[in-house]
Image (tube, rainbow, N blue to C red; front, side):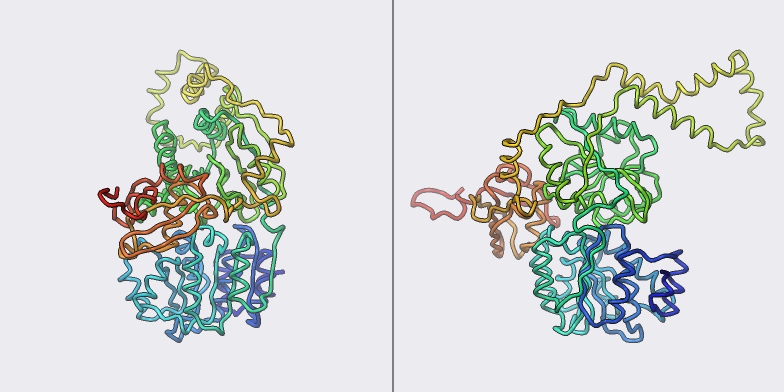
Length: 561
C-alpha cells in the first residue's frame, strides 16, 4: 500500500512526497482511514518510532479549515521537546495549505508571545498540559471550538503526574468532539481516560502491547555498584562510532555523569529539567548536528526526542517504572533500523530485568563488560576504517610533502603505520593496562528469593510497581503553594523527578495558598527527604521536611519547628 491509496487530499499527498515518505507504516495504514472517516474516537497503541505523528497529523490537517481563525485541533503531549517536534511535523504536513496557523505552547518560552499568536487565530494548538492550563486560567485560549483532541504519549503524561491537569483541560472542551489517544502502553490510568472522555473508541494495536521493537538488541551488563561508571566508560570505548543516549534517573545524576564523561574526554551534552530553555535548545542542536555524540538525559527531558540513527540507548540506571524501559528503548531502531538497548545493573537488580522481560515479552541477554583487549581491538578497527575512508587531496598535501618526506624517510612503511596507530590508541592501552575484570558474578536466582523480591517490588498480576495504596505513608511539608503556582501535577513531577521514584509512590496531596503537604510510601520516604530536601521551583527556593511538627497541635509553651 502507498499513501495514494489512503484517500488523502492532493495537497497533503504533495507534502508527504516532498518529505520523502513512500510507504506508510502499519499504524498509519490502520489509523488514517478511521480518522479520515471521522465517525469514531480512536485509541492507537504503538511503540515510539512507528510513525504515530503522521498517523494522526495527516488526517488532522485534512479535517482543519484553515480559512477559519477558530482553534479546531488540540494536541496535548508531555514535554516541550515533543511539543516542538509535533508542531514542526504538522507544519510540514500543511505546507501547501492556505495560511496554516499552528502553534507550539509550552513552558520555558514567553507566555505573552504565545498569547498574542493565539489571539491572531491558530487553527491547531500543540501544548504541554501545564502551560495550556495557564492559558486557560488567563482566559487567553478558548477550547469551545475544538473539534478534535489528540492525546500523544498519554501513558507518559499520566506517569509524569499530569492526571489532574488532563482532567481539567478535557472538561473545558466540547462534549461533541473526537478524541484520538495514542500511547505506547495501556495502563489502567490511560484506560480510565478512554472510558471517561471517549465514546466507544475504535482500538488499534500495532505489535504486542507494551512490547519493544523487534529490531532492538536488548542486553544487560552486571557489575558491583561501585563500578557502574567505569562499566559505562568501557561500553562507550567498545563502540567508537556510538551515537547514543544515556538515561539517568534524576537531574542531579544526569549532570554528574555528564560532567564526569566530559572531564574524561567524551563528546557529551546533558539534558534535564534544571537547564534553561536556551541551554536545552543548545544541547539538542549539538546532538542533532552530531557535534556531540552522546546525550545524557532524564526520562522526562528526552521524551519526544526525534533524532535519526541513534545506535545505542544505555540505561545507566533502570527506571523505577518498568514501563519506561519501553519508552527509553524506543529512541533507537526507528524507521526500521536496528539498535542496541543496554542496561547496567548491580547484583541485586536482576529481578528488575525479569520484570521487564515479562512486560516486553523479549529476552534480555546477559553480556560481559568488555575488557582491555576487546576495547583495544575495536578502537584499532575503528581507526583503520577511518583512515581507509579518509579522502586524499593530493594538491593540498603536495606543498607539505618535502617536510613530510624529510621527517619520515628514516622509517619503513610498517614503522609509520605502527606509529600512527599507536598515536591514536595508546591512551586506551595505557588506561586499561592494569584494568581488572568488572563483571560481577551472577547470583543464582532461587525461587524463594525472587518471589520475595517480586512481592515487595511489583504487583505479580500486572507487572507494575506495587502502589500499596493502603500501606504505611510518610507526610511531608513543602513551603510552596498555590501562590507560588504549585499544583498537584507539578508537585508530583517535582518529587518524582528529583527523588527518582515513580508517581505510584505518591499518595494524598494538599495544596494551600503558601504551602503544601504530600504523602509518599514509607519505604521511599528517606530517599525523598534526602533528594528533595531543598532546591528551586520556577525561581523560588523551597524546603521539604517531615510534616508531623508542622501540622501537629502546638502545645502551650513549646515552639513549632
